[in-house]
Amino acid sequence: MLEEIRIQGLGVIDDAVLDLDAGLTVVTGETGAGKTMVVTGLSLLLGGRADAGLVRPNADRAVVEGRVRLDGASPAARRAVDAGAQLDDDTLIVMRTISRDGRSRAYAGGTGVPAAVLAELADETVALHGQSDQMRLLRPSRQRQILDRYAGTAVEEPLTTYRSRYARLAEVEAELTELVARARERAQEADLLRFGLVEVEAADPQPGEDKALAAEEDRLAYADSLRGAAAQAHAALTGDDDPAAEAVDALSQVAAARKALDAAGVHDPELAGVSDRLAEAAVLLADAGADLASYAAGVDTDPLRLQAIGERRAVLGALTRKYGDSIDEVLEWARRSAQRLGELDGSDDRIVGLRAERQDLLAALAKLAGQVSAARCAAAERLGAAVTTELAALAMPHAVLTADVAQTEVVDPAESEEGAGKRRTGGSGRTSASSSGQTPAEGARKALLVDGRWLSFGPHGVDEVELRLSPHPGAPARPVQRGASGGELSRVMLAVEVVFAGVDGVPTFVFDEVDAGVGGRAAVEIGRRLARLATNAQVVVVTHLPQVAAFADRHYVVRKSNDGSVTRSGLTRLDDDGRVEELARMLAGLDDSASARAHAEELLATAAAARTPKRTTSRRAKKAGGAGASRGDSAK
Image 1 (cartoon, helix red, strand yellow):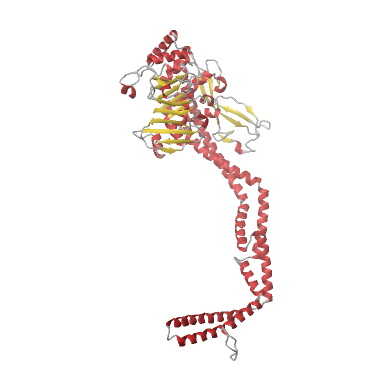
Image 2 (image 1 turned 90 degrees about the vertical axis):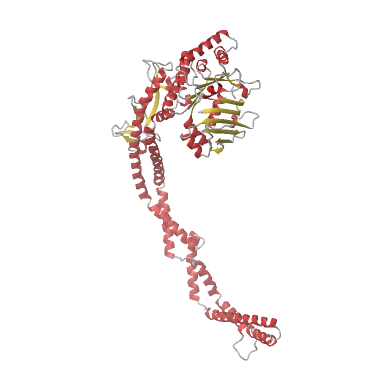
């Protein structure tokens, strides 16, 4: 239950606080005073779309804050806790802000949350009926949603599975369409891949082969130079093989140096250390000389091998020009291409598999659609009867509302060559012809075989739902979007919401101008029905009708100050005298009209007599000790 709403910087409202309690609360005021901004603020608080244009001029941001009392074990309380919110004595503080640049932030229990979380909490706590809901009632999609909501799990469970299968069917058909449409492209791609793979396979390249051959080719091409350099370096290290030649090689010079140091090293340890290092150098030089001798002996000039390497590199170069910068990249291309070729060669098998899956999905969809349709038809009878009963209590005693469930049947061309098309059939037995470019034989996606009939289908099943109203005996039942007046549409919408009150168990209902287009006795009956609804739920109504306001348990008036804003003192809870004055103003448009006051007092007396048995005194009334709020007191 909503306990308090505070609005700052929203539209014409500067700062206003609305205290709420159980029962029926009405908000009235002059046109443009900001009554609807109260509902707009509540809509934001319940996760509605934020709009920077709602921020009051000269304000940095708009802020809407609410205090909601929840049952600690309710789904709404659990969802709030899951989102990180903290509840204080089963009370949840929610807040929504909109900055001037359009940024919106939502908070629940002191924790920042997505606005979608507030919307989820609203689904369990508040049913908000704004002025636009009557227009949405005119849409067939909205009428179907109303019926599905009323049917409950009988429709929800099979419809959820149906939508999942339908989404998969869309994926299957998209892939099928692509595979079939690109058959020629796939064949061309496969031919190119086969050619390349044959070429690579014929060459049989080995990993790193191109680099190894390049190095070997360099050695063979410069064999004489390499051998000569190795021999010259060997001679410089180890000397000439002629024993008569003078020893000028590196090893001999190192040996002479060591001999000189060894003789003097006995007198100075430092020289002995240098001698040891020369001994190490001699070992290294000897090893290097041996390696050079071995290398020079191993270098061979082989023109035939050099020619073979050149030819092999030419073959590998042809591959690297086409399929990669190196042989390793060519091998990786071959691996990927072989995998892709397998996919392309398996496309035909894939098409067969997808077509089989499509048939299975269509069969499953047909079965589920039949279940959904049967549940809708059963719920349609109950919904029509329940709403008709409510309309009788809203000054429409002879009106009958029916929820018509119909299907569009796709005619099998085998029955008639000229009959290919669609006809709409339903419980009412009406049919309407329409052209069709598809038949079951041409495109099974366009129809499901349900109970022996080919029916057009979509993401919500095979049914088309239409609310039809017969306002009085003898009048034909016509779609509400074409046959209902503004006042009748308002009462139909209210009747639907009242019916859902017994189904959903939502504790709070908010109505904005639910009485639009209504007056006279019908307005009195709307007020009476709202008061009855408020015996078991919290009801907040923004209204322009005194007949409705007369039934209020609490009456607030919105008054605009001279600068066009609504301050906290401008949203006022009225006492008994204040209610008489406000109802008189609403009746006559005059502040001092004796006849209007008399009429207002009569309305209040009639409403008070109608609200029997007396409702249990609210907790705030008990707290106040029965003392009435004085006229002009602030809501805070």
